[in-house]
Length: 61
Image 1 (tube, one colour):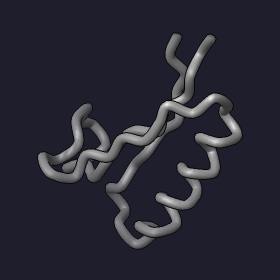
Image 2 (image 1 turned 180 degrees about the vertical axis):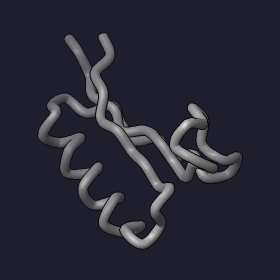
Image 3 (image 1 turned 90 degrees about the vertical axis):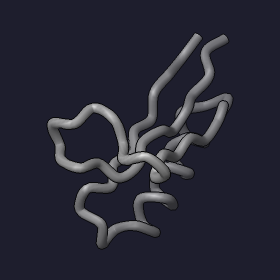
Image 4 (image 1 turned 120 degrees about the vertical axis):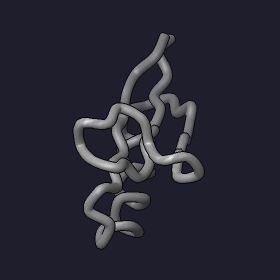
């Protein structure tokens, strides 16, 4: 059964594929995309003023 995760952090710029060291964030696994989305929304709202803060929800088997 697939699980959902939220990962990301603060990036130097949008072309850089890895977050800056010490800013990495990882949450999960979640049983549903809805649960992961709730965490994504809450974490994004906390850092709304940081323009290089990105998180994404993704699925893994």
